[in-house]
Image 1 (cartoon, rainbow, N blue to C red):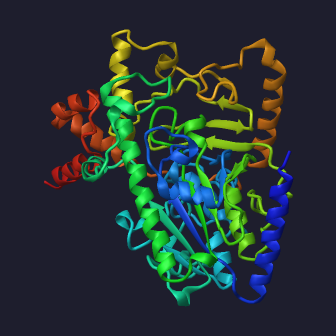
Image 2: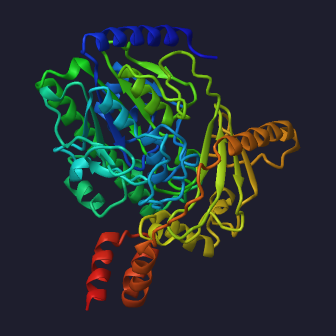
Image 3: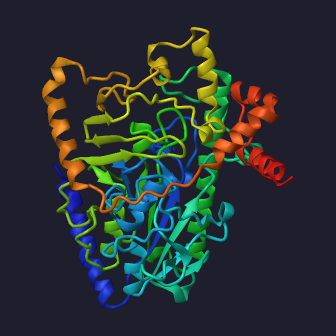
Length: 495
């Protein structure tokens, strides 16, 4: 059941925006996209982390609690958001694939539609880590330039700075720090108040180990870092006199990079933060519990800009009070060298997962993740020592169940698979039927498949052969540095 007061508010917002469009005073829109982040902000209830800026955005705006990406990996998820259309439907569901293949002619990047309507589109920001320019879509694109989808594939007009003459503008800014990287230790060392590993609260399927606690604390340090970046952006808007007429969306591109997170169709991989901030026209402190897909944000941005949502989009604007979304369809396919096919349905109460390749375990020893998940290495060793409990062992099983069903309200960490529980047979059958319907509805528009060989496979093998001491450090729960050993590998093969 939709919140009636929310619907009335959003109708009012649309009316106001329509008037603004007629007077060419349409709102500026900033899309802040943090990498690899789950609901791990203070305003969402995460202990020990301090996020005063995000708290302020939520207090003055609307915080969503049931927003899901359509894929828990960056490039398919971003492909869906850039088009407002599910990544499977547009054949962009395989990570880092089809990079030289144009979109189907009827599908357009939403930035192209904004530009046609008179918006200046801006990529990145001069003040954030590495300027926040990431695009990462699984179809042919260029960062800047014209778009016709045939010879021209530019997505944005300019880089890094919004100016008064750019209005109305749309600015996509990538907040990189939360992505696993060699900067995590440096960010922690420079923090005025690094998170105390002894104070973190780990999910029950994690082993309580010093290396895992430190890794979690480092992750929260990165969240505090991006909180400061957002504060800087807000201050710039104030200084330039643009704050009152700028709508801000804060979102994650997928869940946190850890166990059952990024790359998995469980809650930590699919459920992401979403905060909408526009105090000029949105009453603050609202909590939206409606099921929302990341593609819905794309559709909503178009409507905020005074545009109609194209029929081909699978995203639905949540401003008109007519969204009938009751569930979100998630998919996981190729990720580097791991050829997967997993599908999921998420509702406000249940999650159903269908593993088409159950023989591939959760812990698939993917080369890229070997560099970036200390908890996995530590828990592998604890498993050998017989020190993991039942909930912790599930991730390290030799195979996956063919089906998974979880009661998200009573089992938020998805510890109890109900798929074989006879009491839930009717629910299971309903979810199976929904899955079959979505599989047909989102069938790919083409079957082109051009994956890219993942360099991480070569880097890991080279590291094993040439730096076994580093592998031992990795297995002990240390991040040895993917970039560091990648650079060493590239130098070595030049010789």
